[in-house]
Length: 364
Ligand code: ATP
Image (cartoon, rainbow, N blue to C red):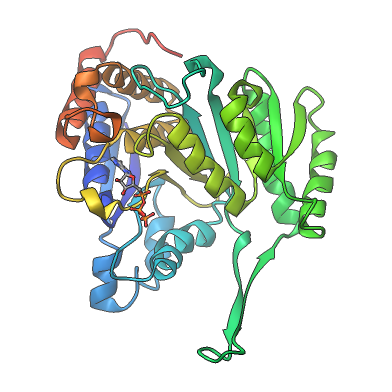
């Protein structure tokens, strides 16, 4: 029997609630499967670890992660620690350290979800946003001098390398090619940013030649926000820089009904290092410890993890269970207008996985 070694990094806030829920779903799946099992190791890194040790994770923490098949991550953020410390000290350290350069965020309106765009049918919104995950605006290059003086200067330098741009765009075209519509939109800002973003556009035109069956177009990031709202069906695969995609994917999650639903995969496509899967939402301290956190974003991330591990049937079985549960408004958490708790939604998804074990799959 195959054993997958999974690192669990709950992090902060509601990450500590949704990641154990994700583990329960994986355990329910393993109980219903005979061909594979999971071996979990928990890493209690994040804000509490920082208060004790002065860092968000140990210096050699990446070594422990490298030995795993995949990582399930919650969130990094703490109201008492500056955001740039929590982000750079944990999530970005893992993404950049394990060269997870493709951040993939699918968005769909799941059954039973009342999405805010009234003229948008569920079939009109089926996107996957591909975010460059290791450089660009989040390269970390820059600095501050003359701090505290009126002459203070601060810079954050967006760094784009030809290799970094080419590999994410090729990943995006390949993904678009694998989807039924074979449609890709490249998000840019090359009208205002006349160096790196012009290179970004030029490389896309070169990479596109390798994918003659993919139809593609270019959209300025500002226009892309309006197009997502006004013409959602005109989009399918969306490729954007680190910062642009960060913003667009929060908009996408909101348009699909809630920040609590969206999943993310941080992929190292060459599989030299493990990939990391996480809900799109953050630590949400306002609802922490109240059982209000919607675990669906974590469960959908678990589906992406299973797909990455090559367990396609298992992934479809979990997705089917999620959609069965979202279709029932009595199992909606507060962010979706319901009263169900994290534990109730988790139990319902686990029960559905158990109930469908051994039965044919009905959804694709
Ligand atoms: P961070 O600083 O870690 O990004 P944040 O609290 O600023 O965290 P998010 O966690 O992304 O930002 O969420 C914004 C708001 O959306 C939260 O305050 C919470 O009310 C709501 N929210 C986010 N995720 C969920 C969820 N899984 N279930 C229910 N509500 C959620």
